[in-house]
Each structure stands twice: as structure tokens, then as C-alpha cells.
Length: 80
Image (cartoon, rainbow, N blue to C red; front, side):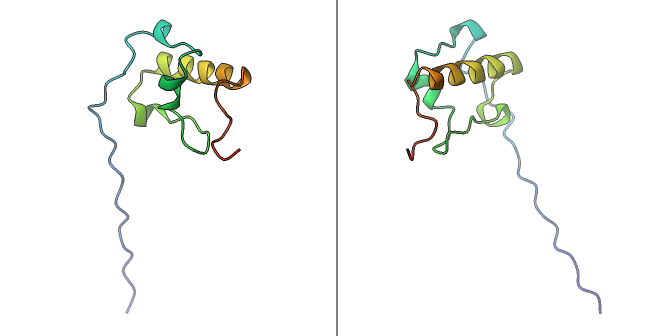
């Protein structure tokens, strides 16, 4: 008798997320508290499906986070 494979459940991504920024010019590297909301404790940037951001805002957010890391406003990870 053959064993049946279990079907893996797909994780559903919420579709009703709204972008916290209206346009990319609102994102600034000096606003550390806002940028920390989009970073994990490991220092990874959340993907746009989890944050609900548009693609142009997500690109600008990633640039500003990297800029803030370079200026030492945000640590590269929380464990350091």
C-alpha cells in the first residue's frame, strides 16, 4: 500500500495592506524610528508583501535603510 503525501498548506499573504507612505519622498534616513519598523532583529529588510509598500517606495526604503546603516544610525543587526 502506497503512502499518501500530505498537501502543504500555502501561507496566505494579506492583500489589504496599505502603504504607510504616500510617496517615496517622505522616507528619510534620519527618521530611525520609522525605519526600524521595517527591519527584523537579524537586520534584514522586510519584503514588500509583508509591509504592503509599493515597489518604488520599497526601493527607496531599502536605500534609506542602507544609508542609515552606513551613517551608523541603525546597527547592522541587533545582536552586535
